[in-house]
Image 1 (cartoon, rainbow, N blue to C red):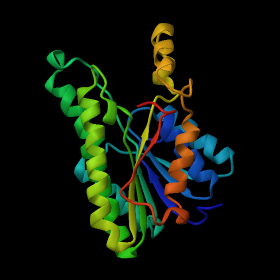
Image 2: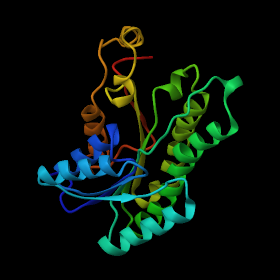
Image 3: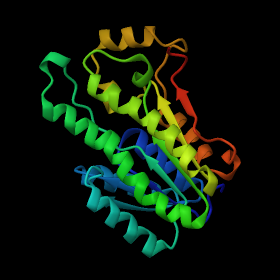
Length: 246
């Protein structure tokens, strides 16, 4: 139980990689407060799965792009629990389109959730961590931050921004014993990749040296480690979980 007695927040924890992270942290002994936006049923299923496994968690609605709402969310969380040991900035959206067809609102929505959302949450969480002189922040980036992807200029830019944000924040907070790292998943077996046509899926697998999609649980295992005391000398790093995809 490497996280016994600790409190973590996972944004976007109702589905996919976020759900796997929330479940892993709870299984490792933490109390997990995970957020969702629209899919209350998915959030409830995630919460039930954690509790059936003997874990402790809460599912709360939060729009991470709303600066004021985020500040109030973290204030309430810390008031209730008296501590916040770690934050996982996982919430993210896509709005894919070729650049010449991309609408302004498609660009803005992706940036507001993926990048501004990470800023909003990290700023609110860091206040408590600075006072405690301890804490862990893990930001979810993506393989496309390094490789690019046609039709995802907005998403790739937001996830590349996460990398710069992570490295700068690691330098700012290191004197308070707070570590900040990024995890960059490759193509992971989630609802999004499951919906790919067979030809597209085969082409994708052909690009991955290990010849398979990643599992959400493999990303979650790394996140749990980075939030642990064992990872106290790791900060400002971007760790890729992508099966060797370059």
